Length: 446
Ligand code: ADP
Image: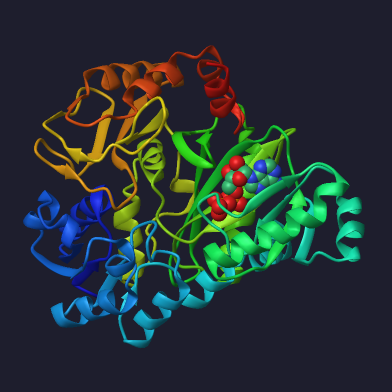
């Protein structure tokens, strides 16, 4: 149980967590960096504490500073949001050892799932289907060639400790294999301080489909449907939707219940996402995210549940008050990530927002911390808002999204709103079920 929580994150998700806390009567302490001093959500929080300088390594990623901030303000729990320290097993362990509550699964579970080889092993044990591959460390030796011949080209070499779409290399021919293993190891060592790599079959034209789960401390766990996040650029999601088009409900229900079984076996608590690639009517597990995700909103829209409130409630030790039979999916929801960036060359566009007027109306939701006069700092991720639409059908959700994007007025900085509008006009997108290569192929053909 806790009644005061430190928000160890910034931007729209900090505000989202503040709102959920208010509804539950939990007091909030907002951690912020020097670059975020002037942000509205920092000013309006019940309490706020500066945790360091603008670069995230000196504030939002500073484990000791965050823990100290919780201790000096008397917060009994820490919500890490997404990104930053949200999947940092060591930080979660520090929080536990300090006698505080980390809003998420136990540090041991984060560590296990953060190692993608371990995660795949755990999934295979639980009967969750995985991308065919070798579930162990790959090294640039003769054995590698044997392993990869048995999988069949093309393959993808991936960092076991990877994240954020980095540390991956596709290999199509034997002659490139050894150099690719060495290069991925080096990159992984540099980026994640863990040079371990593994290999799986490279699926040529998959979709990205993910399953949301929610678990309490008492072994109760439900799956909350699926999302399609195939519209990506450089492995970063741009548009997400729920439910995924043309993925058989029977398949989702089967795999969803296996995810639930995996969570029970792991002793998983909180929100979690199982990410899959979907090809030839099959789902193949790629990784688990042990945290709240940016795109949780589309699941909220079609289930009517407040996922952040549920996340806080199970962290407080409450028992889930819903069972699988209580969960149903209504309508269709789409989320566009609005970034402060040039819509043509994708360069970040930080600076002062001279005028900000988000859209409204039936079936539209805007999650943002921005208002007129806000200065987008250059130090962090460029996402400044999420525009979420809901409709009875996918067509209606698209139409409402288009209306919302056209109404959205942002002056002073560039945003990717024009890019979203042109994606939504594409026949392929409108038809639905695009692959993870759709956006990049279309951008290359423009
Ligand atoms: P990260 O943790 O960096 O996000 P993931 O394992 O989730 O890494 O993979 C990110 C993206 O890379 C996927 O959404 C997909 O686009 C691509 N990818 C990963 N594994 C494969 C694979 N076996 N075949 C094809 N594409 C893949």
